[in-house]
Image (cartoon, rainbow, N blue to C red; front, side):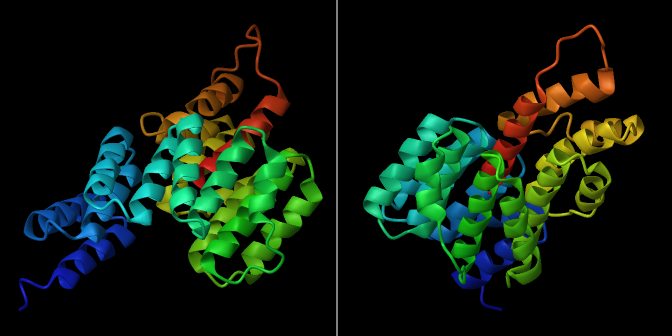
Length: 284
């Protein structure tokens, strides 16, 4: 009825993306860009879809195209940094977040991203300073609170981290954020050798963005339970679609619980735990 209404075109694409109909969403965003070449939402939406389906090189180029065309758009800058973080290019991600904060000093999304990267490279004090929000209210503050919990988990304050995750599951008003707290709680349960509890959490997670992390963690939980069939099923579900930043973790769990070669020297449990925490930070 209104073929030249840009809001309708971008809105349709956003809805398709929200329902994980990524192939259709990508087509819709590309058509919107052709029709409305100055619409930043469509450019960023296309990049988000490419990242969601694991086409990271293309997502990075799409965000860079958006930044070139819309240099004052903070969403594009944060999106580019998120892709760099997702593929484990932490030094570049750190620089990208720092540049974004220099340009947009009050942007909490960039601050959260910076905190997650700092924690991934072991700069815990700096990371905690960015996410120490006593009573989160906004969506971005709840994300910061989740990151705080993961940092506490990684530095060994397991019980404090569990309190954060349980509070996030029970009290945060943003339903889409609950799976992030649940996934983090699963890592804490694995750390405490509560593998049944972890497996129960992970099998009920359906958020597409968390699927790779949840499946990798499931290999660990089921493997510890000697349920090697489910461990193998979890591995095979992401064998060809695992983000580069967590493939080393996936492959180590494969060696430990699927191949089970007793002659191979495995990584330590501490190595696994740190990498699982990093997987949470990458997905945050």
